Length: 79
Image (tube, rainbow, N blue to C red; front, side):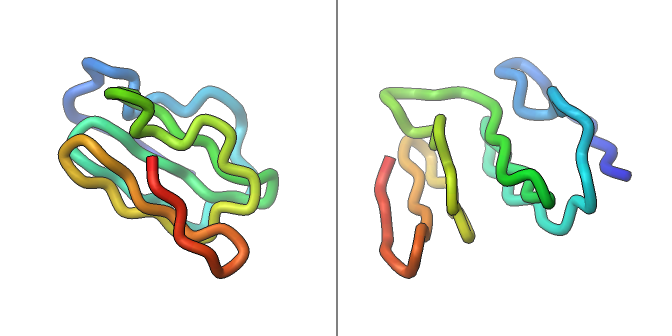
C-alpha cells in the first residue's frame, strides 16, 4: 500500500480513492501524483493552474516551484 506523511496543507498527501497496484509516485513541495492501474490522481496546491487536474495518459511529471512539466503520449505539457 501507499502511506503518505508530512505537511498536508494543500491536500498533497491525501489519497482520495482506493489504489490498485500503485506503481509510481511523483511529488514536489506542495503537489503529488500517484499512478496506478486506474490512472493518475494528482493532489495539492494548484497555484495558477500548475497542477494537472485531468491527467489522463500522464506518463511522468516533474514539479517546479510554480509550474509542472508532464509527458502525455510522448509530448511534453506545461501547467
